[in-house]
Length: 136
Image 1 (cartoon, rainbow, N blue to C red):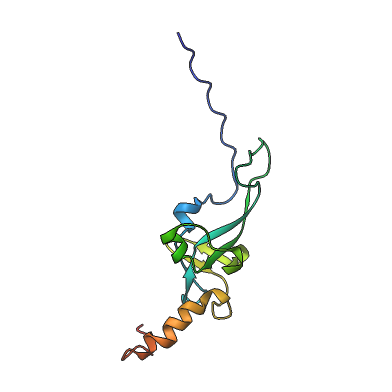
Image 2 (tube, one colour; image 1 turned 180 degrees about the horizontal axis):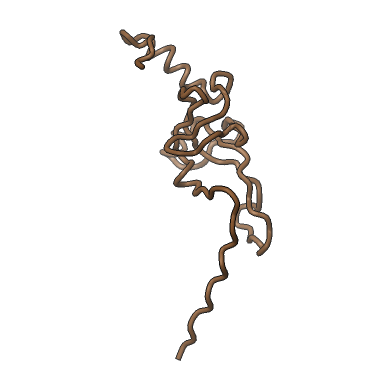
């Protein structure tokens, strides 16, 4: 007869909210504190063990440092990874809320990440009749 598997150890209590990066962060729209679209989350910057490195029991958990965004459409279609120099960092300390969208606690206009949204707004949407006023 085979013996029953050993029970798993209890999961330690964690203060705060636990986020699943794939489910709660990746590909989410990012809005600034005024509700203006800034960008979408393309990747995450995490400190901690290197890729394919074993995590020793009792070692500190990895820490999320920043949301990354940039021109990743080509690499998603054809594979590979964009160079880190092409990605724009939004520090995690600027994130105010994670829900259906990621809300920042800062204005999005000065962020480098919002240049695509500004370009589309100014060059395309503004040329559509009625595109220069707020629909609210």
